[in-house]
Image 1 (tube, rainbow, N blue to C red):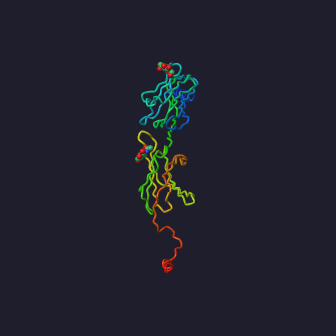
Image 2 (spheres, helix red, strand yellow):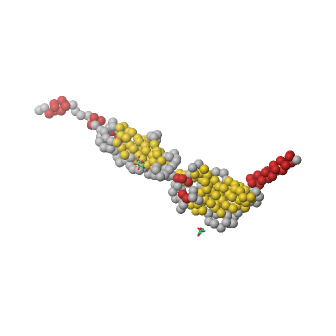
Image 3 (cartoon, helix red, strand yellow):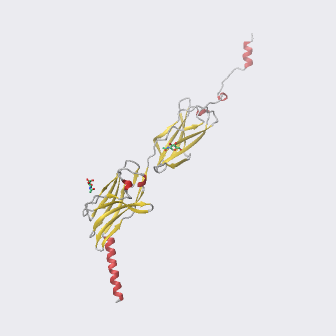
Length: 288
Ligand SMILES: *[C@@H]1O[C@H](CO)[C@@H](O)[C@H](O)[C@H]1NC(C)=O
Ligand SMILES: *[C@@H]1O[C@H](CO)[C@@H](O)[C@H](O)[C@H]1NC(C)=O
């Protein structure tokens, strides 16, 4: 007696589980899964497929303080209400459009982003409420991650340098460059251009100067600072020093600023003096 009761009970649980697992699938997908800060579009889609269940609502969730919370609530045609942002989802106001599913068996709920902000970098899940053989219950998707990138910008200004005037050969000059190096954090590279008397250019890259960066207040992109120290030589007179952004390991062709030609004073001893008759010889010639 005891044995058969247990058996029947197990069978019932088993059927219920198989039913729950096999006949409703819920998926969440972000396209693309990388958003670029600003006016870029991204679609977060929660799709479900059912066989016998009747879907009544969908919630899209994201992690807030470490816990998944509903940010948007969707309804299927059986409930004629528009999709809405929840209180937790209020931060998305004016940046997203919500679209309800149009079917209770196979369809999807959509969040269409028209503008991407730093806080959109997060994990997302969706939960589908449905009526099945076991009554009202819900099924959840896996987790989808959205990452947010920020494009770098032109360096803030032409590189500054110290000392800024009266530079003599042998002086160490410190060049400084700052600016938005993007997210993920990029860096600066430096290039010195020397011009010789034939107007040939000699280009010397400095790729491994450190760039330190801090996240800018109010955004998640990085403000980088880099310095280059050069001991100025005579050949550096009129040289130009350039600071260029490197983002995701690629030097950004248009994102650079460079100095004007730098004046370097050098002493006369370095000027080559060619043949000059000895003074006593001159004196002799002047002798009458
Ligand atoms: C639902 O959305 C439509 C279109 O956005 C709008 O015209 C309508 O007023 C909304 N209905 C409710 C009840 O908010
Ligand atoms: C980066 O920081 C420097 C100060 O360290 C500041 O002068 C500059 O305006 C900042 N740049 C940006 C793009 O915020």
